[in-house]
Image 1: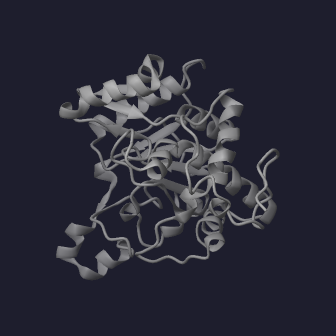
Image 2: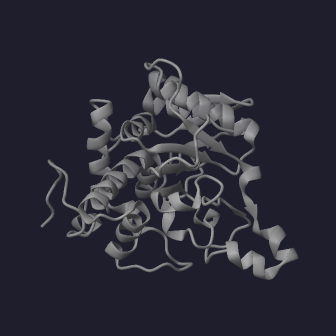
Length: 304
């Protein structure tokens, strides 16, 4: 399902967002009352009203910062898409409500966007039973049955190098598209109170994406490279890491990206801030992004 977009127009940067775990947490009926009470007590009624969406009888909680992030990306001319292995009947109204709330102060129509769902995924489990060679074309080192193919599905082949998939589960990536993947901390709970580091990373995912995206755009501009190459430089090369089944995106724990992201989101929503302080190891010097690849934005903290 989509708001019409011409796939054959000149390539532009495209950000493809996963929903569950990356942007929202869907809460089952047995957890609904407890989660609502927890969010209201910790964050207040206004936050609850703004960030909860009721779809198909289930509450969905949007992580903070995404309203500002989507607006910022749209202002930069980034094409927005959403790709979830959930069913279309849930995905389409959920994304529409998120977009309407994001751009509520703007006249119709909404900015262009597209929604991809379970039937757009490739089931490599099914391929395994039919043809091992075909399966290998789609199954990278991160094993999983459903794959979110970008080329030919979300964007044409010649636009692939300008496209990123932002997801919290690396098993959804397709072979050959590994470096288009922006990895978030896996999230299955909205508010995590047993691990301060993962809890912060989960809840502030939009801040991280904003900071990383700003660094990517600046690297593309200064080095004259495309988005895929920049994503590889920052997520792998700058971390001294290589693609393997053990790779888990260490850049998602870099304090600098969250701080940069906060500055970006404040451009859209003044006063935007973290909902609790940066925990260790975020606040430690070793958790800052390696230097030398991207010039720091104005006002960013120095780490000696």
